[in-house]
Length: 567
Ligand code: G3I
Ligand code: 9MR
Picture 1 (tube, protein in one colour):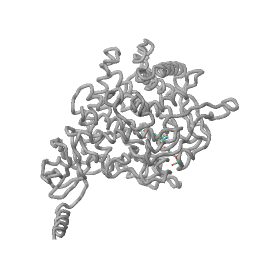
Picture 2: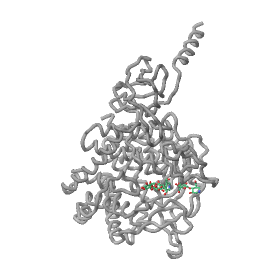
Picture 3: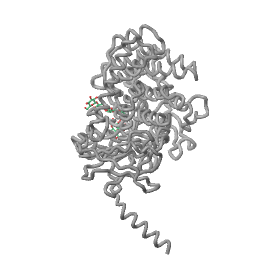
Picture 4: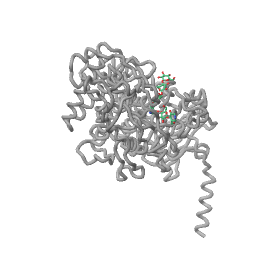
């Protein structure tokens, strides 16, 4: 009889609480003191209720904002601020008695697992090493791409039999190429995260083969790519080769099954300057752990800078017969790379030659991406402790706050409450939005004004589910996540779940992956509403690939918010 009444109760419960889970929220949750915004489709209801799911009691009732249209999706939506909920717990949102949200978690460690997974993903991207089950779990795999015999393309430009050894490094993305330019901003971001949260990251284990060493795991992981980068510098003149790839992208195969010849290509100024910048940065960070490596990195950085001064505008040109990635923006002038490299070298050496270069080069106010790294220098110049001229530091701080204020003000006015600008919806849109978040975090570090932290929170909310598609764009982290990313190991390993902790590129209506060829996508875009132009399909390298310069800002953003939630 008791079971009968229980059944009745359960059925009633479900009937009373009809579900329409249309609310856009951060699917991993919120820190206790974090800004908490729910977005919902336009409704006549005036208020939204939040219930504690443990007690089923209403703990907060708040009014919806007036309806507004989000220009990137065309939706008419309303917002509700539930930041007043600060007690750790499990909640849900209701409108007129109908539940409208997934579970809402509130507690200070909601991003800890994501931080670890987004950093651990770089281990999964290692070239030249077998991933053992004790570190890689079911995504363990054989080694691929030893890269101990790498040739030059075009082969005609080198003597018969010319080759170099260029092992280790991270695969760039869903492909198996290794690219210096994309390594630059990716390595900077991870090392800059370490510089900002050193005490915490010294204690963070990623369960990688080097976890038992005295070197922090994040530094051990980045070292795998730094060691490779060093092999890409020509010892004769200091120039740095632009990339290391096969001539053409391979099929959907595991690393060990991609055995085609691999090549380095021409040295370029952007690659050489990006190399110089990260090697100067690394020389400072690794000095306490490996003085010899630190000295080698600084020497390599200075030699690279000298090559770039002599070769100020050597831009990448894809060799005949090669179709792999280019990392060569249309408007490349190499001034941004030169300012960034001079900035890092000045901090490491305090030499006047670098100060003079800094005096001569302009700032710009563009969120950093692989094609414009100027803002990475602005971050440095804005830090008084780095010892730049006071007027330069002030100018850099003003530049940084001007951009941060622009992003924050857009969030305040936006229908979704998001600091998103039109430029964001390019190939790799999620990473540009994560970098918006990092700009806002730097403004918070400088001013301690919580409004910047609140705006940064909104960029992570967007990535983790507070978006028109209600998808958390990180594999394995959220209620609805990418299952078919453009990532060769995930596609070829025969395992249902993709490698975890990867950030999908995100919506963008460039349509570079749309077309009639068998490998291309059928039309999936909603032209004019870029925030809807995403498809969870292998075919979509323009919206659903993964990349090291996308996961690095994700790790930084999730990690910074985690540590700031727990300070
Ligand atoms: O910067 C301009 C911007 O000013 C303009 O408004 C916008 C729209 O036209 O275009 C922007 O340039 C775009 C650039 O990305 C920066 O966002 C280019 O159109 C676009 O083609 C370029 O796409 C790059 C793509 O390779 C094709 O070159 C992506 O950034 C880059 O992440 C991607 O990188 C690939 C590697 O080549 C190979 N490995 C996988 C990796 C990820 O897909
Ligand atoms: O897998 C490649 C991905 O990493 C690149 O971002 C993309 C654009 O350059 O190209 C992908 O490779 C495709 C190639 O360009 C055309 N043949 C099919 C390949 C797999 O989709």
